[in-house]
Image (cartoon, rainbow, N blue to C red):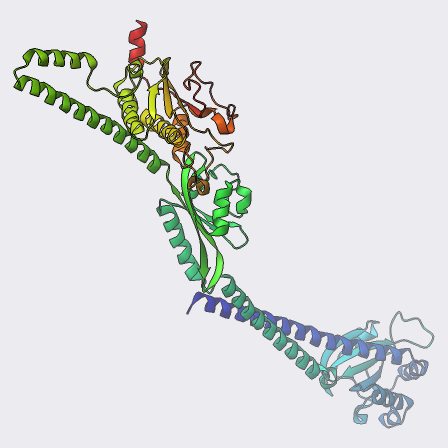
Length: 568
């Protein structure tokens, strides 16, 4: 038997028991009320008879006679006639009047007149009223016994007789069938209402739980907890009213919601302070890539959730792209360096062919002079002016390889003549990623501009920090913020990093305690960027090219040993 069915039966049984107990209690109260009414009626009739002057006078006369009253005279006496008249008018079982010896002076059965009553009368003659249910000569009855006092005397002291009035049970409980019928009807109505309410409650419960039973909900909750905590993606479930109902730990960390006092659960999605791109993705059921939240580059995908063909909300999947994009950028830097090595190998192979040709032609002196010249010139000639100012081989390789790519696109790449860097780069991956991204953007901007197409790179050492400046001769940067995540704009303009590369480069710099900023927007935007950033190196790298100028500071990427050796 399913749990919901057991709960329904338990509810119905509870209703039946409660209604039955209530009906029994109500019935007992009703019976007691009927008994009380009969006893009160008997007391009131007995008091009325005992207070009648004629009754008091007649009873006083019989009590004063020391002999036993004559039964024949009592049958035709005034007391017997009075008692029969009261019995007929009130519907009582009996009205009995006795003297101070308990001798019946009036009784429904004339044959018992002049005889002593069958019940105790001494307590009543002592001046007390007695109300009780007793068995007498006429059977069980609700009776009231009231003392009769002498004529004119106060109702105190010894009595001269008693009046006993009784009602038979049948007359007392005449209204009991009606009471039982009413109680039964009300009880049946109560059971019907309770059963109906239980069925309505179950139907409402099933509608709220989409037909799932409690045991199904328990299994679903256990499965949901295991799945949500086991997957590597962030999951956020929003109901049709925009209230967050589910948010696993990964989603809270990626969206920066772990610091909320009461957490995101039960709060509107709009009130969580998330970027508009995330909120729009949930509302429109779309996917967005390159969303930067709390320093993370995220991919968000929203899909509607349905149950039985009915929409129950939306589910937002959040994936962390930071590590993936960082790895991509670093792989790109490795590709750049391997390209530089390939160029060096190709150039070195060409020089060996020349030397081999000279030696093969017995032109020994010319071969010796050629090799001496190559030894003086270095391993390879990159088409980069002032490249010799960069003493680090990694920077030379990166800038040289980019210069070759730029030359293929008609762009001249050079090193700023005021560059000053004599230390070795200790962390080439981040340097290559940031510098390579800035040079790629600058080359693209310069290639899209007018002649002369030029890119100037400045490299400066500041302790263990590396300061970079990259200027281009392009059209400049529009007033929009190129660091703001806007994938919709990425497809139309990637010149200055509308994708995620520029934002990731800034993130890489900031993780090292540095930053990446705009020094000059160039011809379109004009002026300096108002984004707060560390001041640029005092040397200029743009040389008045008219395009955009970017600056970057990478902390701790230069070799500290070189600095110590130079100081010594």
